[in-house]
Length: 227
Image (cartoon, rainbow, N blue to C red):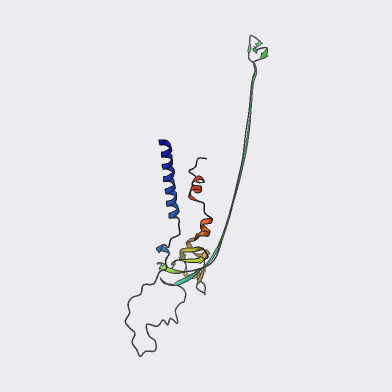
């Protein structure tokens, strides 16, 4: 009876650990992905009587592309990856050993009237094959903000987009480093030009839950199961 109670307590502990792992992988509104607002210093009120006021943004001769913290930039998602791997192994080995019957004083040794010869035969064969193919594609657009301007002029951008559709929420996140030279005239840059890119596409809700295994099923399909 004590062993059964210990086994139940062990399964309960494993269940709590798996539930904690599920909570760790849930979608959260993390602050590191939030938009970055520019830091503005307090300015004196503009004086009347001039043609242009300091409070008005009249950047007639400046670049309209994102170039400072807080500016927005559109990332065009053009992610497409394909991977394929195939391996085949085949081995074979045959062994054969034959020993003639020994002779004593010119006479062959016999056993029950038969020559006492020895013969060994062995055969070993192995065939193995493996194949793996994976394809992923992500397209769309997401507008992010410039979080920091690096010393070499590159821009560190980050942002996220939430979409609430029917009974679920879809989330797209991206962060990385963009060169100002790669920004197009419409203030956009393809995701293939984003260095150190971290792109996440996930969701939560009834649809996501329906396509997710339960914690007990994940335990029996995990690497910790010896069977």
